[in-house]
Image (tube, rainbow, N blue to C red; front, top):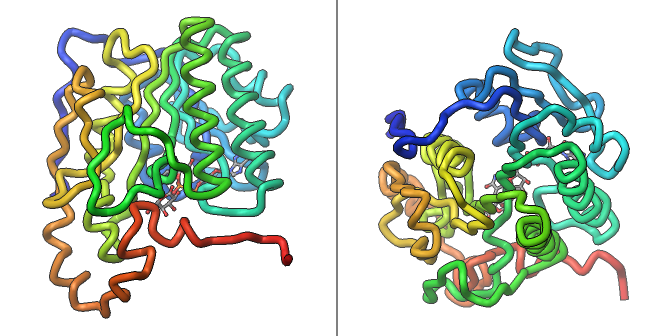
Length: 281
Ligand code: NAI
Ligand code: 15L
């Protein structure tokens, strides 16, 4: 655990001039913000107005921005070579919230990339694009999408934006269907879906700097003992996670198990598959 994965994809450049990081004030954003410094001379960090702490480092510039504001997003992407797009609503919520931050937000981001000449995006997609597969199924990136709510739908839309903007405009994207990136797994389900910050950081590097990725979909998980996802379609990234949820097994298994029929024990998307509807009948 905690080992730094330092091998870059062989022969590729390993630094941009200016990199945009959206969602920089969020859980993952705060954890990786200083690590992404190695990917660019200057990192433009962004989040909702008022969300960013006022502690920008010399290699950072803070540009608050609501992703739903098209003009502001256009300006946000100016002079950037690449984008790590973490910003948006990260859980199941009423459709109107998802529409603004995630659907209009990802549209605004890709349009800004097209207009401003950004050539590479890493999109924080989610395992909730395929949340209705069972935990006893193993899928790869070619499996039919089965979004488990409005949130999963918005990530599915984001992946389609990525494909369309590659096919039409040649903007390359790696969509990382993130499992569960947290300091440690929180429950039994995350024993399969967990990904360490070190492994995520290594996957970010590969997603930014591997040549000719087109639109690649990769599942973001550590080398857990049991997983639901097969990354054969993303083999060209050379991603080989080093961490595992196994050291946390005893702690997790000391907690009471869910009923065997509970969606958290049956479906890959767990509790997301039953969150909502938000409007009373
Ligand atoms: P988070 O909720 O902690 O951070 C998301 C950030 O986006 C927040 O700081 C929030 O202020 C910002 N944001 C929300 N609406 C915005 C808007 N309209 N304009 C600008 N910024 C806005 O989420 P977390 O855990 O850091 O996840 C980062 C990304 O990775 C999210 O896109 C999430 O959907 C995705 N993801 C995360 C997983 C995880 O295990 N943490 C799993 C799968 C996907
Ligand atoms: C996600 O997409 C969420 O953003 C995150 O908060 C976790 O709940 C994660 O999926 C998960 O499935 O564990």
